[in-house]
Image 1: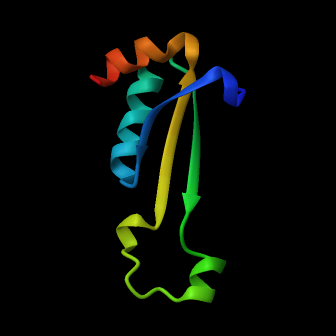
Image 2 (image 1 turned 45 degrees about the vertical axis):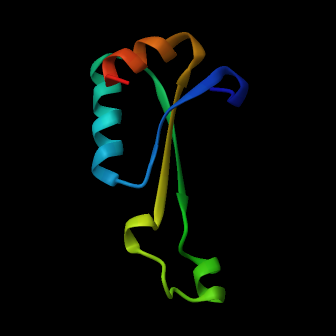
Length: 78
């Protein structure tokens, strides 16, 4: 799915919540892409981990096609 042909339906840090969103989309046969950003790794090694909560270590983005965006919002209750 190309970036200009998709819309974001979820953005968050909670692994269970993003898994629930993906399950709902799959159940409703809505194709999605997921992007996971890790805020640990090399950057953390250079700057240290002081003040970095484990809860915000991974950031999740879930996208659907523009054609499925309204349906995805509806099934997700958003």
